[in-house]
Structures are given as structure tokens and as C-alpha cells.
Length: 202
Ligand SMILES: *[C@@H]1O[C@H](CO)[C@@H](O)[C@H](O)[C@H]1NC(C)=O
Image (cartoon, rainbow, N blue to C red; front, side):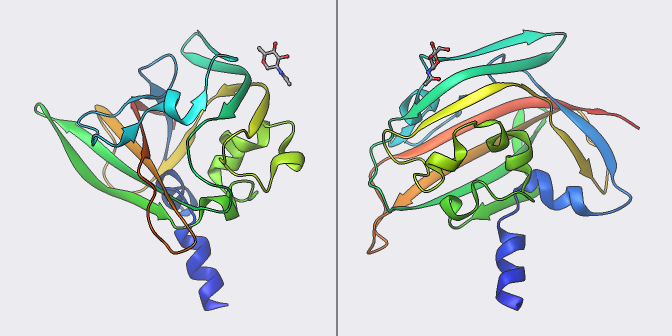
């Protein structure tokens, strides 16, 4: 029970941990880039960007009144092996007088494949629930060749934060690492960043 609870808490992305607390302020995340994800600043040399993660030639992003609509499909091309454990980490930074400073908001998901279609999670709400063939590919995670087919959907991310109000630009850096059966890390990692602002709703 305790383990389960710990696991569940661990599996919650940063955007999310805080969303479950009461009395927070509600914000809409407004991404700067029309494709949502950018290449990471100062990425390590073994890092691949979105185009190294999935084939993006069949997916389109279009922006209307600030809202990004996504449609099409992606095929995973990251060169890892079926069965690898994929660890995800997201860290939020705030732009402050010319420097990106880490904030207290960060989360690590030790085994992304186990929770990718887990309904209580925010990534399900904002992303994986729109994958129409999810039943078919639910065991294939991000392994090479996995094709995710999307119904057209809008990226409209609402979050609740407690503490000081959020102001200015923020950057969320998401990395994925893969590990083989002996827990040896694969050569390449995926690094994606999203820069944007939080607009307060209430
Ligand atoms: C994938 O997306 C492309 C471009 O939107 C579309 O032409 C194709 O039919 C899609 N394939 C599947 C299997 O949905």
C-alpha cells in the first residue's frame, strides 16, 4: 500500500503534483513555440530532439488564437530496444534576469512505460488519451516502430500551483533515458523543452 502510494506520487509529473493540492491558483500554460517542443538549450552531446524521438513528418501543429491543435500520427524512431525501462524527468526553470534558474518543481518517473496510459495522470488527460489506437499499442511504449495515431486535439494545459504567483517565462525540460535489462543506460537520451508563460485564470 505504502509502496503503491509512493509509486503513484512518483509517477505524477510536476505539473500535476501541485494540481492536486487545494487552494492553488489556476493557470493556463501558453507555449511560445508553435510546435510546443523546442530543442533543449545546452543539451548534452548524446541528446536527441523531438525529431530523433519520433518521425514527425505525419503530424501537424497549427495555432489559432494562441491554442495549438495537433493532428496526424507519429512513429517512434529512438534507437532503443523493446523491454527497455524508460525513465522520464521533468524540471521547471524560471527566467530571471538573463538566467534560467531551476525551481522547486521537478519530478522523475522511474518507469514511464508502466504509466503512459494511466488515467489519473495529467499526461493522459493532455496527451495520451487522444491516441486512438492506444489499446493496440499500449504495451509498445516508445519502442522503435510504435505508431501513435491522434484524433485532432488542442493543447490546452491548465495547472494549479500553490505558493507564490507565477510570473514571466518558464521552461520545462523533459528528458527520457532508456535502460536495458541489466540497467545499463542506452547511448542516447531524448531532451525536449517547452518555454512559455502561465496565464492566471481566477
Ligand atoms: C498518418 O498521418 C498522415 C498525415 O496526416 C495520414 O495521411 C495517414 O493516413 C495517417 N495514418 C494513419 C494510419 O492514420
